[in-house]
Image 1 (cartoon, rainbow, N blue to C red):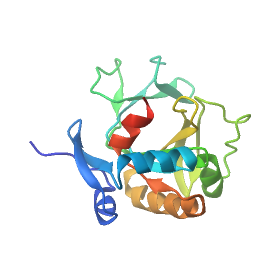
Image 2 (cartoon, rainbow, N blue to C red):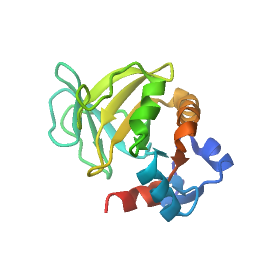
Image 3 (cartoon, rainbow, N blue to C red):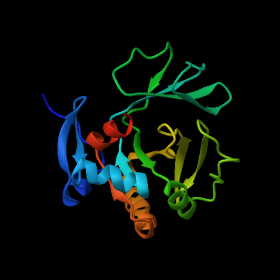
Image 4 (cartoon, rainbow, N blue to C red):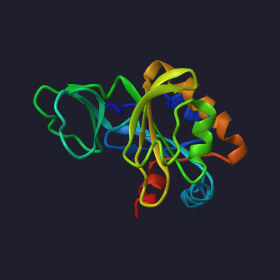
Length: 188
C-alpha cells in the first residue's frame, strides 16, 4: 500500500524529520527528540504539518469539530476516517493544514497576518478567513487545554511558502518544527 505524503514532505525531509506512518500518511514523527520538541513548544512556539486530517466542506452545521466559513457553509475536520454528513464535499487534498501552538504562537501569527488574533477579538474556537504570509488562509483557534494553538489551512500549492514564512517569523521566538509523536504527547 502506498503511503500518502503532504505537500511539505521534501521540505521536511531536508529539515531532518524522522517519518512515521500516521493513518496511512508518511508524516514527521519528530524533528528532534519529542521531549525536547514538547519543551520548546511549551516555552515558546512550535509548527507541525497536520495535512492528514480529513476536511469536509458542508452546508449544514455538522456539530463538534466544525467551523463556520459563511452562511450555511462549514468546515468539518476530523482525525480518523469519518462518515461525512450528507452532501459533504471532501476537501482534504485541497488544503495543507499547519498547527501553530505554544505561548508565542500569537506573536508569530501577528507577524504573518493583519487578522486581530488577540484573546478578546479571536477567542478559543474562533474561525476566520484572512491572508497569512500573503496567502489566503482559514485561521482557526483551537487551544490544546490551556495552551494557545491555531490551525492554518492553505491551498497545497502554497504550503512550502507559508511553512517557510512561518518558520522565519518564528525564528526570534525559537520556533521548533515538531511531529505527530510530539503532538500526541501535548494532548495528554
